Structures are given as structure tokens and as C-alpha cells.
Length: 417
Ligand code: AMP
Image (tube, rainbow, N blue to C red; front, side):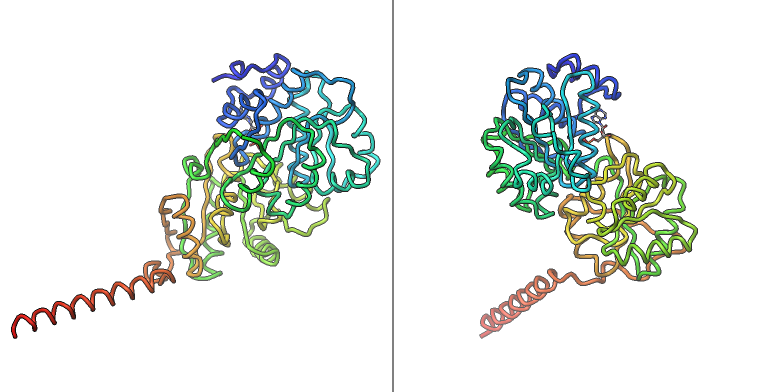
């Protein structure tokens, strides 16, 4: 399928060409047609699948198909979980609308109020906003939702995780005259996304671009067994010194661990950028910039701190500390292997991580390859680690076998008599 098969206007096709997109990605092929037919869309698409253009393009086409009447309010509202993601989406909207008349704007925290003042009445067509700041404006009556025709919820799972459910419900209620709602989420399983979708969408078309389970096709994943923290550090340093590592994100579980690991990597001659949840915005931007531009090619972060950052060309993701759930694992490794490029995800498994590794393997339906680094072989053998779940089962099996043996003995005795 080509973009021209999607019945998009020439001004959009021109912008697409300028972006260098040759063919629509799977999510674009699946989501654009029903959105243009006026249907609600429930899309499962992780970052990296081209999802942003998947909702921005039909939104722009909608604006071209139905020119603005007498109203002067915002017509398309896109909600993003974080300021960074909102900024990226805004950028995509600007790029793809450059040859059309559509006017785009952005409202996020951290930008002073004056800049936002005219959005409500300034004939803005597409507004990208973070929920918290937008609701503030709605509540102080400096923003009006009456003209909103499309509501797009991007990364709905993240927004729910971040505690925005009530805020979004309020905004959805304010925008109740809308005609269509599109909900995009990396995963549709659990975390309340299904209930949320049921509340917001009417008879939606379900589209699944790249199910998280299929991510593994382009992301090469393996694990190293680690005896303890020192062993794990030595393994990580070895991996980071490989030529293939051009841009790596290392995930750790707490911000204390961010600081600790950065210090250790610096001592090993591996300078790194770092992100932690509570960080001044300018410092955060500086750290991201140094990683994006390649000034630093290693970024250490927690899950919370890495939310919303969208960086192309990440070659490696390291789970220095394993996450607690398979879901987070998939979200982490989705930072690499973007837009068809190859990626590698390496996890370090200490004895206490074996259970979560099992969860991940069951979820992706694949046993991850165990690799060993020469000279850094682990001392512990994974097979000896008792699984909590296996114990009662084994016990039951033994009891069953013993009972059967006893019964056999009794039967033999009875025969003799
Ligand atoms: P997203 O999933 O929206 O964050 O997009 C991930 C990356 O894919 C971005 O760098 C986009 O510029 C790029 N992209 C989006 N659509 C296409 C396409 N049809 N062909 C190639 N790259 C694309």
C-alpha cells in the first residue's frame, strides 16, 4: 500500500514526501481509513510504529474535508502524557501540515501563561496538550472545548499510569460535543485501558499495529546471569565497550541507583548522561540533548524519568535492574528497534530476578537466550534456583506418587492373602 491509496490530499502527500516517508507503516495503513470514515478508533501501537502520523494525518485530512465554519475554537484536541511527547507530536503536526492551512498549537506545563492565552479563540485547528495544564485552563475558563470535533488520547496507558484518569474524564466531559475519539495505547491489556476505552469510545474499530509480542522479531534479546552487583557491573562495562553499542539506554530501578551507576561508569571511562524523575526541566533537556546529539552515547534512567522521551537510533537497551512486570520490560525494549531498525535488548539477571524473567518469557512466548562472557562466567546455575510456584507443585507430585506406591503395595498384599 502507498500513501496515495489512503485518499489523502496532495498537500499532505507533499509533506509526507518531504518527511521522507516512502510507505505507510502498518498502524497508518490500519488506523487512517476508519478514522476518515468517521469511526472511533482503538489502536494498540507502541512508540516507534509511526503512530503519531497515524492520527495526525487523518486529523489534517478531516480539517481539509470539513473546512471551518463560523466557530473559532480548537477542532482537534490531542492529549499527551508528558511535555516531551506533546512537543514531539506538535512537531509532527507542524511538519505534516506545512502545506495546508491548518494551525497547530501546544499547551503544556512549564510554558508561561501569556503564550497560551489566545489559543481558545485564535482559530487554532489542532491543539496538543498535557492533561493537567489543559484542565487548569478549562477550570479557570480560559479554554473552551465546545468546538472540539476529534479527541485523540495518545499513550493512554501511560496517562493512566501517571494518574490522569480523572483529569481526562473531566476533559472528555467538557468535549462532549465531539464527533470522534481515537485512543492509542502501547498495550490494551490490563492497567484499566479497556475500561477507559469503553467509557470514551463508541463502537470503535480495533486496530493492532505491532502487538508487543511481535516486537521481538526485530529486537534481538538475551540475558546474562549475574552473581552480584560487582559481577553485573563488570558485565555491563564489557557490553558497553563493544563497537556495536552506538546509543544505549540503561534502566535502573531507583534514582539512587542512577547516581551510583553513573559514578561507576565514569570511573570505568564511560561517560554517561542521566535522567531521574525529579529533575529541573533545563537539566533534563540538556541531558536528553547530549544523548540525542551523540555527545554522550550512554543514558542511565529510571522508568519514570524515561517516560515520553522519544529518541531514534537507540541501538541497545540494557535492563541493568530488571523491571517488576513484563509490560514494563516490553515498554523498555521498545526504545530500540524503532521504525524498522535493528535493536538489541540485554538483561542482567540476578538470582532474585528469575521469577520476573519467567513472567517475561511467558508473556513473549519465548525463552530468552542465556549468554556468557568469557572471563565473566556466572557462578550460580539458574536451574538450582527454586521457583516459588514450583515448590508446592513438586510437593504435590511427590505426595501423589507416594500415595500411588502405597496403594500398589496394599493391592499386592491383598492379592497374597
Ligand atoms: P512514532 O511511532 O510516531 O513515534 O514514530 C516513530 C518514527 O517513525 C518517527 O521518527 C517518524 O518520523 C517515523 N515514521 C513515521 N511514519 C513513517 C513512515 N510511514 N515511514 C517511515 N518512517 C516513519
